[in-house]
Amino acid sequence: MIPTILPTYNRAPLSFVEGAGAWLVTDDGRRYLDLGAGIAVNALGHANPDLVAALTAQAGKLWHVSNLYQIPAQQRLADLLVAATFADTVFFTNSGTEACELAVKMARKYWFDRGRPDRTRILTFTGSFHGRSSAGIAAAGSEKMTHGFGPLLPGFTHLPWGDHAALDAAIRDADVGAVLVEPVQGEGGIRPMPDACLKGLRDLCDATGVLMILDEVQCGMGRTGRLFAHEWAGITPDIMMVAKGIGGGFPLGAVLATENAASGMTAGTHGSTYGGNPLACAVGARVMEIVADDAFLAEVNRKAGQFRQGLDSLVARHPDVFEAVRGQGLMIGLKCRAANTDIVKAGYAAGVLTVPAADNVIRILPPLNIPEDDIAEALRRLDTAASAVAQAAA
Image (cartoon, rainbow, N blue to C red; front, side, top):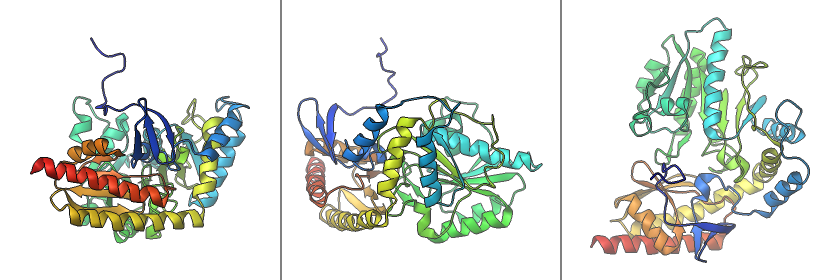
């Protein structure tokens, strides 16, 4: 008999009932240090008092009215995002995959309205992840995600990650309308695109008119030590997808765009029943007030340095378990020699939670405000987990 919850997840044998900061507590009272933060969602930790206050204040006033009406909390969050970024306009969604759907529609409508309905093709990269909707899996093209779900949405070309010659050749094709890229791949194994490559991609887009779409669902909202990862390269996109950390744990996503790129999205071309609801936007505005602050981001970078130094030492102590540290800010990948799933499972026994990724990597995505003492404790618990894996292999 099929379970009452559709069995599409390989869940860990853990059930959490309470959380505070970087810590989670199971139903039987065990405490775990959470270095996954709900896959980069709980950017300010569990049960953050500022976010709880913002949510409960809004919950006592108004939950939902739909986008048939003006929503003051939505306007406030849009104003904060526009003031802090390249964007002129924002559309709110409930998730990153919904943001992907709109970004694809926006790019194609842009060219349709300019008399070029043939410019529908979007260039993407191997190892990418853009959600699990029809457009999201077609954009990534991974056999793991697309198997059995054909026919796939057409119009995507998957280029090898890091192959600049292939990109340079493909982007000049007459039917290419946009390029979609994560400045730091998350599911793909915490692979940052070098600043020079992002700059070169921006130059190619400018030269060809191709729209640049950045997927900052996982690497945005302060995760890399800047509000958005592309800021390190000193470039701006035409369209950007945001989610995960923007809601601090409350479901929220967004598409940010320039006025030019969004010009085709007029009344009736897109919509969402729940997108930008008062509850989500009240929390999102408070997240922005905290994260979009130079002093806060400086602390993210300082703590990232502390974490990286400790992880480098961990790799040196366990060369048979770990290979290297990579990533940016508090979006860190540990490239493993042992099976990454074995290390994740050993972490359960050691009371520390990490997230597996492709390329035999474990992701470390702690709350951006994780205390120094918790970083030190996290390193100790990771050391314990690595020792257990090494001993089991001996």
